[in-house]
Length: 94
Image (cartoon, rainbow, N blue to C red; front, side, top):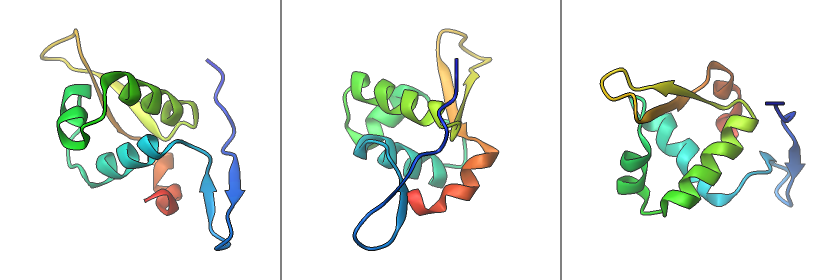
């Protein structure tokens, strides 16, 4: 999979932001404040988005390499998501 380059957009307040959906920003913020990697069902409980919306937002964040997908070693049918080390550079998303 090719990674997208971080595409910055300046808004009217002179803040630079990545061009991602509102749900992706909310998930980024949730992962930023979480102490452990989260599964899709945990994100769904916290944010009340549909699974389809969550998967779309996670895909956006993975394309920018802001999050990492890890296998859940206790249940290999599900994955867990956490912030990538690079994501610390993008504090302005939160």
